[in-house]
Length: 387
View 1: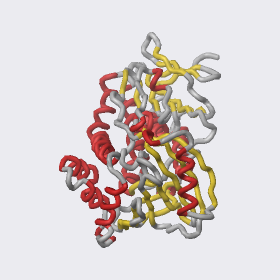
View 2: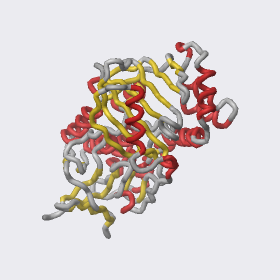
View 3: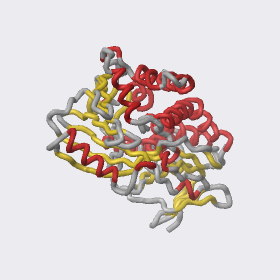
View 4: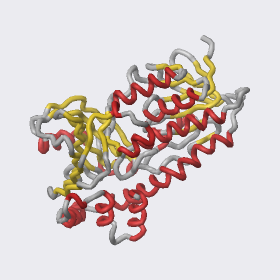
């Protein structure tokens, strides 16, 4: 079969890839969007939490994508000391399956050609500077490629990036959906400690009506085959005994520095493939929405009317990322490196001190100020991260 030709090929239909395809198509570029799965948005490899300001800034007023509103957080130390954080910004739990599905449909409505159940097995640059994307059934050609195929990105390696992650820069995670009548539906709960989630944390994110996303992440230096699942089952037995558990699955989450460069010739990396994740929390939805839109707009603007590409203009994607969330992510990485060196006794001391504070005065900056109080440089980074 003859190759199909496009201006921009987007590989991966998660939030980053779909946003890129949507915004490039809206500028009347010929766009194709691939995903190896038959359905997007499943399985959900995250807690689905997002701050309201980030959500509105990058997704717009799409409250139909939300499942539940969060009023407070609770942090539980290794010995069980509970710290209630009552002064938090408005936050939501998303319905990722709906959000991801809607973004894909909107990209298609804007003019992008959608190819589900279509794994891209190889990408290579041709002699004329365009890209040849091969699937098992046919070949696609594009002037620009946006790579959004997740943490295990193979396509980035084909295009010359070193995407290897050190063990300290990846979390092995286990996720599930639970139903349990005693879940506090207004509170996100985080558990830390070496017996719960070594080098990471466990979470309960309520979705409403007795349902919650529950999961945990273990730092790669402390993990082994099957350990994340084993720890999650142990956690469920202790904290949510008798809960109905569905869709238990495992996967990796990067907690690394963002990839440099983000642009190589006519290829751009976005989302988990670019390691665009907050390294303290592992959250990346808002990063993906922002980076996907930015990459799609930049790629569309770099396309000339005769099919040529302004490669200097493509560099704006990395420059804009670096000035905004890139700096924020760099700060989170420095804080993660410090937290990795702490032990259960340190976390209990911090929790014991914070537990004396009235919940209504407690917020995330106060927690991190107390944690890094004896480390001025890290304290400055924390202040800027939450500023």
